[in-house]
Length: 396
Image 1: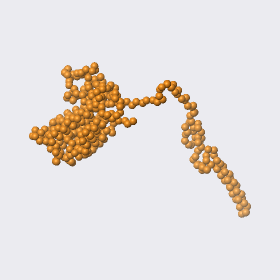
Image 2: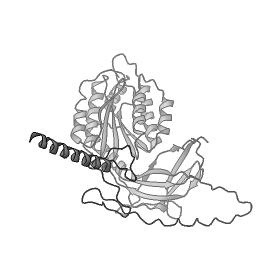
Image 3: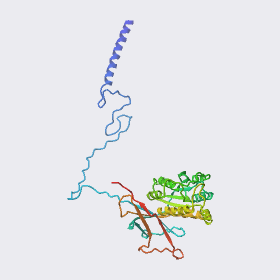
Image 4: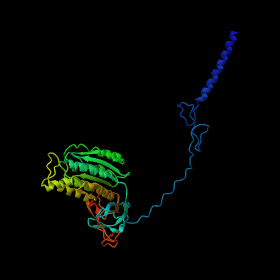
């Protein structure tokens, strides 16, 4: 009995072994399109046909293959003209933008002028104005404040003037606040948060050095904002006296000339104190150990006028604190309301040269323009624009 059962088990084992061998042969048969040494994966599927869709109920969809259309015939080559070279010429014509303010003697913006009322000359050659717009937009400005251990009244006026400027800002304006003594200090970077600006001005409490290095601070500011696109403004609150800068006046003037799209509005501080000392035959003290005379203050006033004139701004010299709100409202009006003139210069050379500009307001026929007020009286007006610009320099 035992022997018969053992034989039956042996026969059954032989049968299972044959079936397993047959299945192993079937599994390892090479599949077309698959490397023979690659192990099969239970989740691997054959590549779906080009028409799209998997061959089973699972798997990714395939993108239907588009019919290959013959390529379009090449365009006909233009006929060869004898004497014409086989290359094209590309000319890059520069565009010059000029911001112009036209105001009455009281600082009111004159807004009803047309393109025909403007005459622009570059190096004495009249230019053709191609684009003309009246701008009223948010501003991007740096408030650069002199705050040093000089004179209590100078510091007091500087802080008051800074707050007066902050009060004229609107919600879309971008403003940065920088103070300077021996070197510039960024109190707050460009922001639209008016509380951050007020907080930055709140730091102007305890001064540091007595030095007022105006040229170095202005150069640093111009260098930073030169990387920004669009029109920028520098509201400079200062006595204008430079005591110990590494740079000289000629270097800062060159920097102003080469900085694009910037307008400087200097506002003098300490005028009342200076006037008091001047009437007594003395110069206002500028800090312990800083030898500053009356001629230094007069030279500073002249420099501030020059900075403003070069960039199309205006310099202000308030005598009393009560003048500050009107001054900064006037600056805000100048900044927000301007004429933008554009032209392609007749001198297209990109040689890095400095070109002098002259902007005049004339009647449409080219004669003298007369502007009248509501009562029919003639109104005197002034035209404010930058004195020139530096052309781009391209080395061939």
